[in-house]
Image (tube, rainbow, N blue to C red; front, top):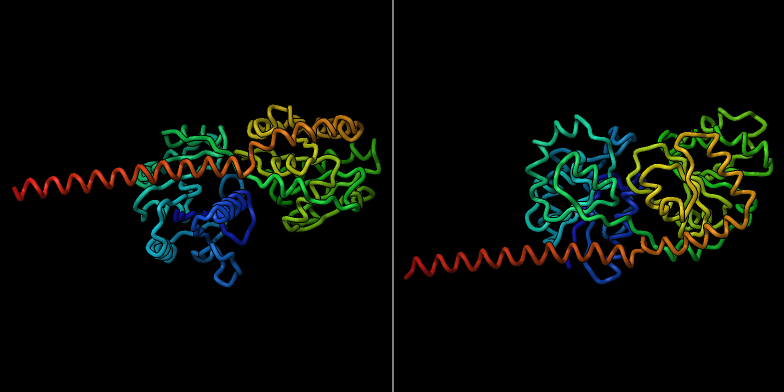
Length: 386
């Protein structure tokens, strides 16, 4: 099958949607499908062979963050050329309502279109106002996927219609077989995310850290991600700042090793999450997970059976829960076992098969429509000749 996948966000700036698209493309390619991904990217950035650049992205405030999107006449021309050259059996657009390549592709594409909705937002006036503009493009979509029940709910409330829920995928074994790093072991708490994006929750964790260190002074916080490190620790007493170690941006391999090494992985995100791919990665690596009780996080963690939850934005509750876990190796071992069983449902062997089933359904439907049109045309020609 020839599959075209559209990424709305810049390939140069890592994020959950980009990782999902990358892993999906590589999974489908390993199964023998021909896959091409169209994504915003600087033209001089090295790209995987399956990624086609649609040109430089620009930063735009979106969903409580800053997304790097691509929209305009040059982008539209590149979309049309990519569609013409690809001759795809199925086009898979991610976030088709964002002002980026997905919307341009919806307008330009012919044939079966699958759309995945990642965003979970409260009902907004902006989305309601934009609906008349979006409607003609959305009507061309053959099948809709939501990565969680909360993303599906956002779709229903904003745009109407419905979607099948297929979660983000993870290569579970990649994380499970990573080797821990000794220097990252021993009384360590892990955090991975953009340091200077408040909704990722690092300020909440920093607020909880003094209470954790007061009871367990040997604890270290390992932080992986980009952002202003000095600003991140500014709220901590000076004597505690050396208990925070910033690792910067880490490779996929080191991310897996970090998750395999820490005693507790903390996800203190405060909102705007429709799924929680980092939780799945942490569970895959066998990390005991402590997360804020966002609806999407609770669903990923099986309502607290596969990981513990604390009250969102409550630093005292976070500190108390972290201290309980750090003091209870048997509880951490229990969470590792439960998490490792639970996370198998998110492996690409399952998720990829579900997505392929959607592709095959819309492709068969398109073939049937085309055949009906050919049959109808032949009948009309025959009737006119007779």
